[in-house]
Image (cartoon, rainbow, N blue to C red):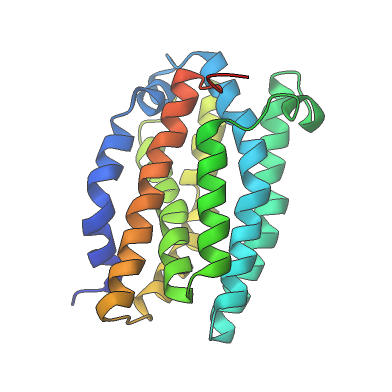
Length: 220
């Protein structure tokens, strides 16, 4: 029996394949990723996560059902508590704290991605918000699950892989996908949901690519 998640994955799966083939992720698994590229990623995550939590909270506010309110409000809090804690510990591995991280400005991709998420979840319909949010969960879960099978000789990279490939995160994502399957948008609303999902998936690729390139602002 076909589920709505399957239709969404048909839209974003091609981007996921490109993400998985990206040298940032292949470098995580074989240990060849330059530490400076990973440092850039962690610093940008420190900028990204607070706005991601705001987007989740806005998604909760848009939900017409209590189950959606509970899910996304809870996950907003979990993002601040769990994923934020991981970033703090990863920063510490580089001898940094959050104040140090914020001395480096959020890069163009980070600003674009967070702005898109917060705007869509705050101003769009609930299906649009859900479309924007689901790839953030699902792509990380699929990446984590896949890389977990490959592991990494670098303990810092293995730690990151274990977090997103681990059972706790996978269960969280499964709950979001069940909620997605319970939504049955049609017509233009369905198109908008899938369009938002594709845009977010592209931003996921761009975020890792920005870390790989150690992207900065071109002027100023």
